Length: 182
Image (cartoon, rainbow, N blue to C red; front, side, top):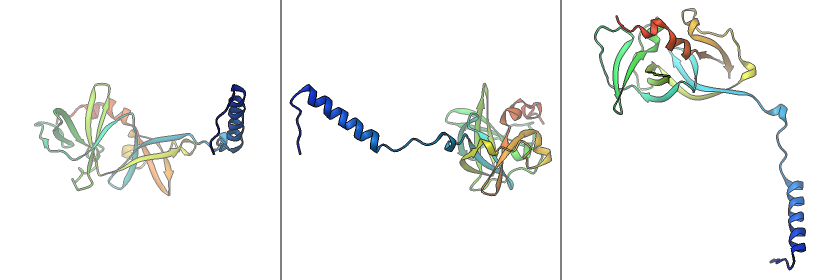
């Protein structure tokens, strides 16, 4: 069916009919109560503990790179990696937190973090990708290990698992972390 309006009045009537049809058949907007305030971050594992870190700190996720040793550095300093022409210090996060160093396996990854002028690669056992949490379910007292408590800032429970928010800001401001000399 081909309809060609003959006058401006017919065009206006046609547009009004289209508007009325659209209003009557449009999908309703979601109710404001249904909208959740979500917090998202990158999920990762250190030993058997699951953490999330704010996307604001993560620059890249990469496989464990080839590193060059740094003489006179602490055991948790794995070395310096050349990442596309940029030097990146690589640290074993588990080793820094006072546990045994992370064994490099197929699923081992490096979180490349950046904040202000600091760049570093943090070795973690595994990456779980983006995680989304309802901010109303935040538990400020959640942490995994007492020795790591100062680097935790609460967490979320999701599908029966605890995801502790790793306080990357506190880590990069820590004198202990910045003092890599052995």
